[in-house]
Image (spheres, rainbow, N blue to C red):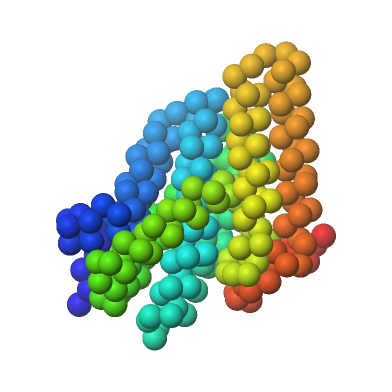
Length: 241
């Protein structure tokens, strides 16, 4: 019987550089941000949602690019286990894309947010209680540390926004990394500028962010970025463009 990584010490998980400890830290920060968002309103809530997106989407991208391929190599049941997580990631991407079109306080925002939180917490449970302990059984401390270093490098340079049309697997997500990261991180800065500045500067920042969103929306439909996904994580958005 596997033991959830949530009930293990840092030493048991392979030390501070282990991929299991890095995953656990992000999950703890996710929980903190969700509680903060629930208590916030207006621009403060939007700023916290940006912080959460900058945690969730790089984290998931690193999993899909580095961690899940490794699990599929070492676990006979890895295909089934990782596909379940990818399906959860896909739904989060789709719902968050809708959330970006809402404002705090309107009915659609209040409808989407609880479902996103439910999925995020379900994703954490599936990873901590099932997937990651099985990986732990197959890899020693050295393997967990090596995987953690690769995961961290990718996480730090990954896209920070939802891209439901981009494949959840290589080679599509790998091809998307550089252009989407540049566009996403530029939008993060522009959106925060638009919320903290007045007049022409705010208008210009908002306009540039919308333009970058349009470029990202068109770019993610380019065929190399959609290759490699499992049919169950295919977004119907790509069929409507």
